[in-house]
Structure formats: structure tokens, C-alpha cells
Length: 237
Image 1: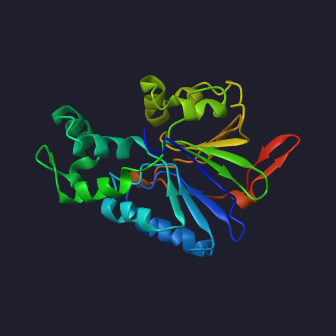
Image 2 (image 1 turned 60 degrees about the vertical axis):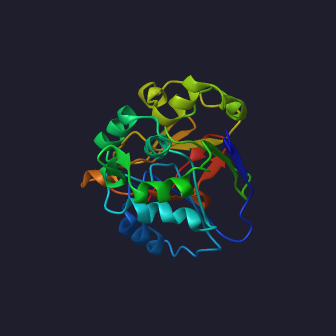
């Protein structure tokens, strides 16, 4: 599986940000970046996946993949798109439609916009290990880390069950007493909607439901996170 896991080196010149599930809401992203005085080419932006579906501009969200300062992992919505375009049949196309994929379908067939999106999304890794200049090591995958040690992630590419868990599972957020994931300082995820960023052990969930109308898009600056003897401290604002 091409680029299943990707290492990203420290950004020596600017800041690193992570966003929750975007779902095509580009105006909200632009406003959030402007509020933090984001500088493209100096600062970097990381996505937990689900760029597409349920919002007003899925093709525009996918176009972020052309930017050198933008990095993303595969979400379950990108996975449904890619599997539909790959011709896996009407069942996956129907599941995608039910989950907001109607923009990319003409009947049961992926349209030109879906094919163009797939071209940009096909190289998405399932997981990113980000090495922050502070020394903080951050693991990013969409739904949750499916193993108890982040060091095992690169070996999961042929494990169908755990790959599915990386895109769809909600075990860690429903079982908050699970031990922290070893081999990494912090893992960051989307997928499950929470009213505000939620830290459970060393797993941080950022999907605050922009597509629900009453929700919002979370943008977190990793430079604002502190790692001390008592663990991880998130910014209060």
C-alpha cells in the first residue's frame, strides 16, 4: 500500500497547525487561518482527514492537496470516494451517497469531479508521524490508533481489520480509561463529533462538527501545546 505511513520532519521556519474534519467548509478554514495569521509556505497545516462530503465545496477542499504546506491523512470519506472511483460496485457508491457523496456521483457512477478528486487523494497516507521542532512527536490518523504502540503503525498496511479501525472505529473515545498509546507523545484524530477538543490519555479528538451547522471547525496550533512531567497541556483558548 503506497505511503501507508509518512514521516514529516520538523518545521524550522514556522508553525504547525492541525484541523478537524473539514467536510468542504473552506470559508470557515480561511477565517480560522486568517485569525491565526497563517503564512503559507512558512507555516504548515495538517488535516485529520474527511476533507470532502456534507459541506458546500468538496472539490475546493480537495484542491488543498496541491499546496506544499498542506498535509492530510485518509479519512473514511476519502476512502469511500476512492473505492467508488476504483469501481468496487454500487454498494460502496450507495454508502458514500448516504454519507454526503452525492456531489461526486451521477446515478451510481462517479462523475468527473470525483475522478479529479481521486487523482489528488490517491496518495494520501493512512497515518502521519509529525516531528515537531519542540521535540513533541505527534501521530495523526483519522478515527483512532488501533494498536497500543504507535511504533506498530507502519506494519498495519496489510491488516484489513485494523486499517478499517483507523478510518471508522470509536473504541478509544468510548473507553476513556484505555492506557495511552505508547511510542508517541500525542495522537490526533477526527471522525467522532465532540463539543470541544477532547483529550483522553494522549489521544486528542478534534472533530467539532462544522457540518452540523451548530458546530465549528477546530484549528489547533501545535506550538501552543506543552509536554511536561504531568503530561500534555492544551491551550485554554
